[in-house]
View 1 (cartoon, rainbow, N blue to C red):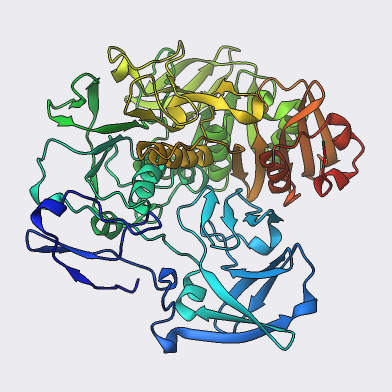
View 2 (cartoon, helix red, strand yellow; view 1 turned 90 degrees about the vertical axis):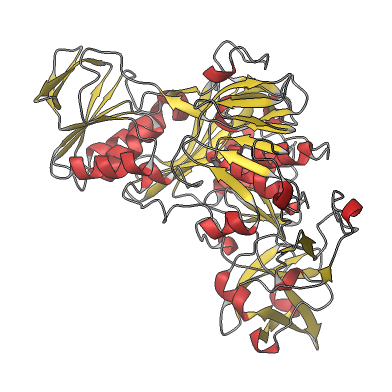
Length: 590
């Protein structure tokens, strides 16, 4: 548990409204007495400047190597006896931080070091090597930072045993100081949606010392959870995939209203109207409602045992119904293919129905799509391509058969539909908030809509992507939602921060991952290095003469390397990747 620093301060009545800020803009380590109830600021032990190690028993110090053992730009995993650290040498200086990515535990020593930060080899999260702070996502926590000292040519690391064991650090956060006298139906910040964007917005506000009321509302019955896991590891319990435990939300006064749907937003009166008639006033609003899966429009679509996977309950229900039975997946989308892969070991048969001639054609291109399709076929998945569903047939109101337009009839006990999604923005139609023809909320690089004080983030927005000359894009992926939520929060606090990040995503099937970075929309060629048949390759997506995206399998950390090159604002030319000579990755590039 975090070490609590208690300084009793009773704030005079007139001062209470002011946010107590320390000079660095973070909340001061105070316990506020508000109407007799103490509100605590939790401070992590290693973020207290005066004395980072309160408990001498918790400290370990070890000599880990000789100064000459590491070259500049090198990283090494070192063992301190009761846990490991990542030792880094850059520009002649040594740094030590946690060695595991707090997201899913990837070994950061296999990641990419560039300009003061290390990027995770698996999913692209980035950490500052001097502070350990998380700078790009996915994941919520930062790395612990350890003290390095050099004596007689030897490098020593001094670390808290607890931090070595947990390998993660939650940033210092403020709490709400106005809770005891608030009006139930008004909040300072209202966040609609409790996915990654909504949660990151709330956490960032608290990390920046914001101490007024924050309310998140969601149609889901759960606190924010790791949605990508719904299709990748389908029988996860809600508690297992929760992004933060319940106590976290209580500790930092982030209120979450579950099973609450907003029906309309009145921007003139700064009020959200809920479906049940409840109204809530706000000062700042974040809309992060994500998207709604498209349903089938064929005959028999209301038959039982046909699912879109939206919740942990949907996922576990599908697993139960599919066990030793026949499954039909409609749509070779990320969701459809991940579900197909997950169910092959459990189901009697798995069939995928898709309009295109190969899976992922628009996203990964034909060659990569074919290689993936082969991998699925060798795992007994049957494909019915270039056709769609014409009818779902039932027996005793339960699904029995799926009829295709090609005339083929498939036996089916359960059907999962993954044919894309539309932004969940219908409730904003009359609001005056700018929405494009496809239903996406239009925002600028500060995540602001056309209405002052109203921000939007995540899958439901289009925003200007610097990487592609500020083309307005929609990037409905997990990492991007995190970044949007953070940028929205910083701009609610008037920090004037613009979004600049390289989109990064991954898909996992049969224990293998495809990683992807950039934005390949409109690519006109694919340059492939490696071996597609062996599923050990890297694919570069080019548009005219420029590389706009990259995908790989079993080729780490190439995607994280390319992401760093693109993040630095460098252009990768098609000719750089055609030769197979990868020196441009370390060179200065154009």
